[in-house]
Length: 187
Length: 180
Image (cartoon, rainbow over all chains, first blue to last red; front, side, top):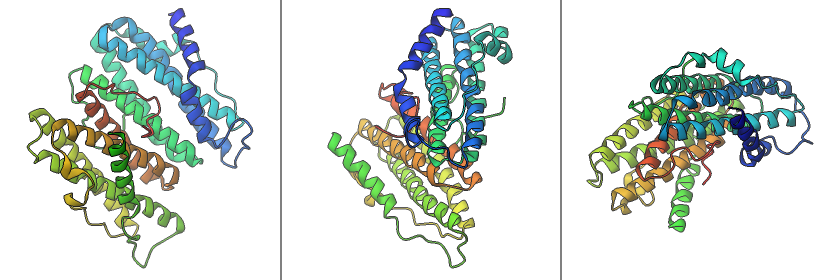
């Protein structure tokens, strides 16, 4: 687990693509002046950041229950959640805010109930629910963002979350695109 | 191949951009509503185009049973998107644009194989994701934003299935913006 965390930290530092996307979305680098809606946007982004940090820990936590393609998917998705977290943290800093501190992985795993999962199927079903909760959170909060660019970025992230959900559903043998409107479900 | 793709993408974008003047009635409301209506109209044309593309694919005889089933599902979901967007557009005082004729959709009549149809569908869905990525930066109404977010996410899920069917990585981007 420790080496995985180190790996993810390294991947986060190297995740220039995601960070760059959000940097661009903020309209510039650290010199961007805070807009009138910046405080509200920082609060929204910090809420999403906590969810993404939890998702990183969740994919780490379920990895021991998975093998083969399902494990590869979980590893990829964990890395992508880390890219989201890094990008959100950068956007918060660009708005003049302070990113919420990342909790210990064990705290997230306990809060999410990962220690109670005992099988591949339970792990995958949990991941589907995780993605459902994440999508629901993005859809609920996206309209609150004042910055149009950040709304676009939030939509791009939630679309990736929906794509991850499709892969997880397929892995469970369920229809990958069950609904025309992906609204997610509150956990 | 790249030139074909670009041409097709540009043509689709053009079709959306030139989708006729805004069809708002005389009682059109605020500048915000009008701005949202412009975005909505473009999205409606895109969804109507997608319905025609999938419907044409379904009846083309080019698809095997599974691909046809997928195309039928996606066609129906695009229709659901179009219906929801048209309802929102009409609430803003707009009149729904007419769906395009298949013959007017660039490149559609040239498809000769299942692989060609799938590549075309991937291009279409990627264009849709890119359009919604832009739309979220412009739309103001919270309810509309929730609706378009749910639609954009669904288009991404379509991409997962289409990419997998041709052996491509299903989730290649942490930020699905529709960029190639």
